[in-house]
Image 1 (tube, rainbow, N blue to C red):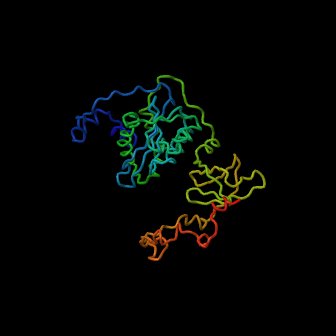
Image 2 (cartoon, rainbow, N blue to C red):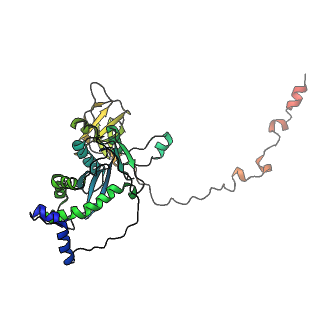
Image 3 (cartoon, rainbow, N blue to C red):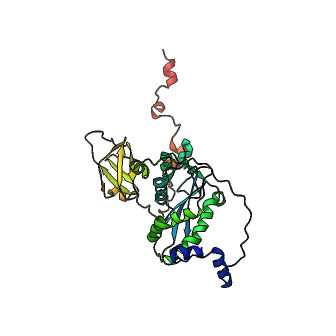
Length: 351
């Protein structure tokens, strides 16, 4: 790599072996290689765009000159062609950014090989299990709309090509950024787009085993705008308010195609903060409002003070419950009968 730097940046053409010998004499090179366990590599796919691996690599790319970052890296399985973007975290929008750049440059791949992070795949929740529904992330839904299959790897070794690619970048890209004196993630991202990825592909990409390109054409900017957005289903309240991520949107009553209360609407959100609310495919007018008082305090905190101890109730000494059977008068002969009134049996026996 030193020979490359000398040729590209200083215009000094030297053979690789010459530079290696000089570095050995100066103690800057070691012939010893670190031993690694043998693992058989999976055969490459035959076609460009048949399978593209996508993964994020967290590393101190700027060697302390700036914050740590995450390299979002896509590698074509058949050719080793790379396209990378630099960001802060491995988020849905970071994955969208690198995938969109790939589509605009090469087309729509058939499948993405990712890890099991919940950006790409997730386990179904209790309601989805009960209804037998498939769990899909926001990124997974976007890929589905584009016809891209997501294949989740069960281990880092399963996506060895992109993992080895990370190791190459952690060596070469770090040195390049150091020599360019780049000290920000934005600067590193610009360098990736303008120079690094093209130079890397020119040196390391190989020809696919089969000539056919399995990429589908890009659907165009308008379609990509419709696909690369967050989508959530929400319910209109009785006063035509939609709540999403603790923000409240008052939907205006439409003269036509009015969305009734308690109906389901779709809230779309783009990376730049734009928001649209749709009902049955039609865009609704809305304005953001402060949280209603009831919503601002959805539940009052329960009193933590323990209640006063309750003593069991006991009847008074003269309460009827405490009187004996004889004292209560139950079963006594009524006063009318005692005064000589005929009994019920006698009355029935008389003609």
